Length: 106
Image 1: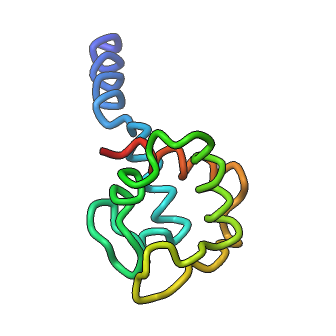
Image 2: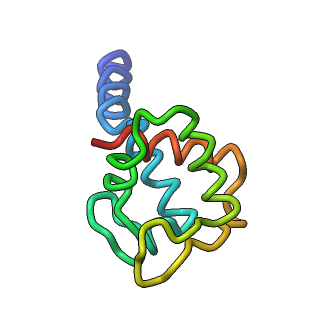
């Protein structure tokens, strides 16, 4: 009986495991990125999928995008809010994680 219960518990936990994509989207939510960017729709800034489309495949873009998160953007997108402000609530490691995730979106 204990083995069956343990097997059922293991199965339930594995079925609810968080995928890397969901974990990254949750990080974006916690760091308030989704206040200005939608994953697939622009809000005040461009959608993350539009960012990925524009920059994917460009050498060193992971690092450049992470730097834009940390220091602010340059108004490349001509969005209503203007240039993106620096995001001081995001650590360097989180900015790298977020930029890699954004560039992986299709």
